[in-house]
Image (tube, rainbow, N blue to C red):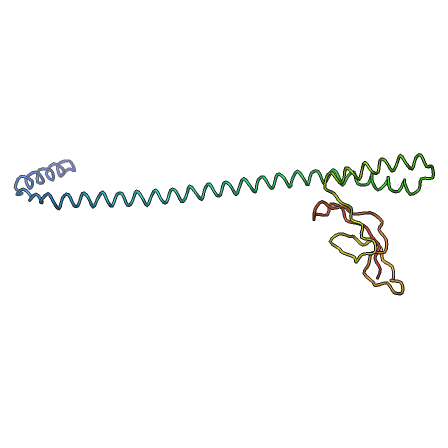
Length: 186
């Protein structure tokens, strides 16, 4: 037999069974109403659970985005400050040279001019929140200083102290932008 013939016979058998069947009993209206009511309650509970789930996901997304925005803002702020610090580090040798010129200057007028320029330079650093690290006669701290020389401690002097500062260090807040180069007693 072909497939189509089998399908036709199956359909005819179903029609015959439907005609021979007795009509099903119709349930009473009260139980049907309860089942519809139960179905509505079940649907309502499912909808409420889905709504609570969506609300939770939405609140988490909002919190996650807010955290992302704050991290991004902090990253940009740090990048800006790091960029400024790079420029300042390149300018610090100018201040070092001004201090050297001031110490070796013999002419009083030139000395006054260099002092004015040095004051302006220090004011600029102060406005940028940069402070000098000058650890002379303090205990050596590798977090702020770089020991480039050492000498034996004199009598009565404890080892591990900064004897001389060759180049001042600078920091912004707690972050060192240039380490002080020092001579340490051993």
